Amino acid sequence: MSRRKSGGMFPAIVLAVSLFASSVTAVLMTGMYSRIQFHVLSSVCSEILRAHPEMEKAVLSSLKNLKCIPDQRRMEMYCWIMATGHGIF
Image (tube, rainbow, N blue to C red):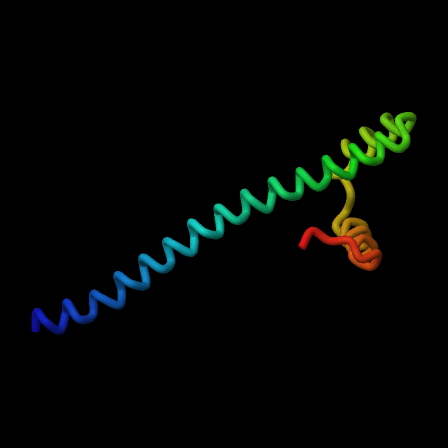
């Protein structure tokens, strides 16, 4: 009986360890993806400002208002970016 219980515990332990490892991986990948997004946005803004220094106020205003954009408009912007052939990966 004891052997039967321990035989059932092994798959449960393997499953628990796998779930924990995948959770940690997801958290780490989320942080990495966030840093990549910030870096790309920073690079784009820097290039815009380097090419057109007079656009500084417009760029800063757009960045401040970015979090207020509704999901539908944000999705349209994303589709436009992808249609131009630009993407992170």
